[in-house]
Length: 313
Image (tube, rainbow, N blue to C red; front, side):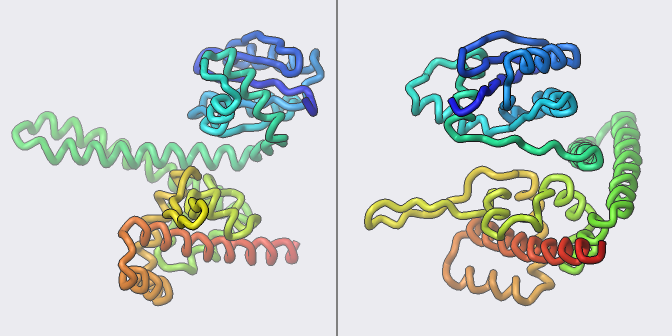
């Protein structure tokens, strides 16, 4: 191996660990005390990089706290690790086996550290995530109320929940807007994005929170990061359909909605959609193409805004 790597398989309660080379296996609790023990274990064995899968949020505490203790960490895609295991003939799957596979995968791919987001970035993402959850809950409660035809008492109960969720939603929107306004770069990006009709406050917040790389990557790279880039599927003379795959689902979903709205007001987007319709493209293909075109435009605006901000400071 090129360097000593610690693979970590994360679950709600445990961190199963394997250091390669050497195949040193152990486990720690997935809490602050267990993470401190893991950090000491890594120092003892001169670990250069700790690698864990992005597993729905259970990895966040370990990732942040290890970085804060000076241990370099990287996040990787679970699907890629599993396919690597199968390619290497490892069909068994246990937490310990997975931790070893993660370390070997990181070495084979020569993974580098995943930068730790700033405190402000972490807080913004948490606020935006909570706002999205509350918005989803509001939708569910409104649907439940609409189905209650014969119970005033039950409708009153649902109304109380809706009122609470609306208050929390307004409070979160205010905190998010204040965070963006208070950061000069974020405010500059927000200003330039809002020049596109259809891009409102929630879209700006989602882009800041879930796609912080925007404006720093090429158009092709940012489209791939959002899961809006077509993947080549050719072999010999066969030219297969080029699907989109992977990427950040939250960003992609909001871009679908915003692109459809923006196309009502922006002639270039409307004409682009009309050409696709005339060419007989499927509805989903049109949605993806519109979202990608919008993202490329926002990426270009972000790139210009970042350059202006850098020159001004």
